[in-house]
Image (cartoon, rainbow, N blue to C red; front, side):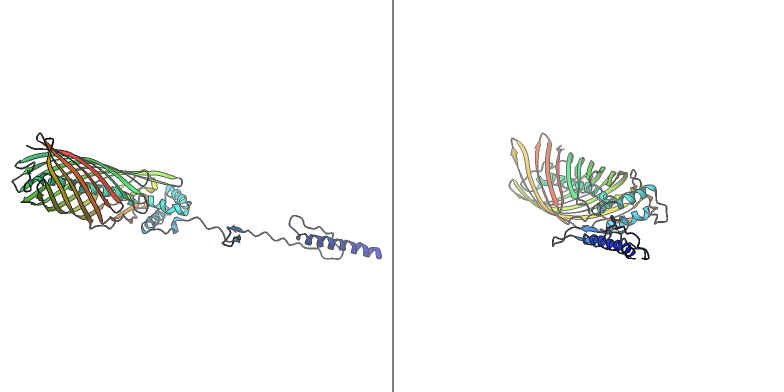
Length: 452
């Protein structure tokens, strides 16, 4: 019996010893579990294995210690729950409706593909991608079209000032007593202004020519007609482009009573627009192109008084101008589900100007010359951004509305010029600069008019 007890006790003691050593070394592991021999008459041993917990290591906190969390990683931002500016939210909602068939239609494969791509973008790129879907970038093209009418009014008003400047007491007008006087000029303009939401600028360049015919009815009245052509090219939001070709025409007149004067004019420009809106985010890179027509109308009224001090002249002046810009509806092509249907647009603006002109006349090497400098302040009465209605071409007619950038209320305007009269002609050149908020513009104008 003693041998039987030994055969039972000795294996049990060995098992306890091995288990004690294993616990002292860090406990049992799933890699090396102890193997025991069954003991006759004893219950079979059981082993419990606990699966390791998945943990996420978080960067050290302010105390320098790392922490861990079992929270799942945040999901990628989705356009369906995106919250940005009111314009971005309107665009995102319209696109989600189209891409998911929310409007009752069936989403196109391209819309679904773009939807998946934009949902994979990092959070800081999602807003910029939505901005590229907006028609508000084309607001810079509308502004450039409206500026054509403004510059045409300014050109005519400056022309009347140059013709009239010699009518004051003690000075001889280069056109005094002449019933007819044709004129022509060329003008270059460079403008840089801000775009909405993007933090970027648009940049436009215009090159044009105008010609007209003055008719001096009598010593107090002057009337005329003009015709002009302007090409404008602009860049906006990276690789996007715009072109405007405009034909302008109008009537103008002046009433001169002693040293005082009132001038005014009306004109219209027929415009052809060509746009290329570039879209690039993630793996999406495409260009939406469009063409449409527009019309701009402008009217101005100005007045002032010419003080003469020998060869010097000082002329305080003020003016008021109103512009109306209309554009036909258009549909883009080339960007598949990101093409836009843009509704017909109309915008109006009224601005005022008050300034002072100083000129000096004399003879230089036998040529009669006049130097002039003008400084003034302009005020825009319509500073609110215009509302633009558009929709994705594949949305089944569901449109959204965005707001263009606000205009700048006030701005400084400076100009200087030189006139020289010889051999029956008067040549002139002017340089102008204006700054209103973040929009700045420079222009150069040169031309000639005849003296019959």
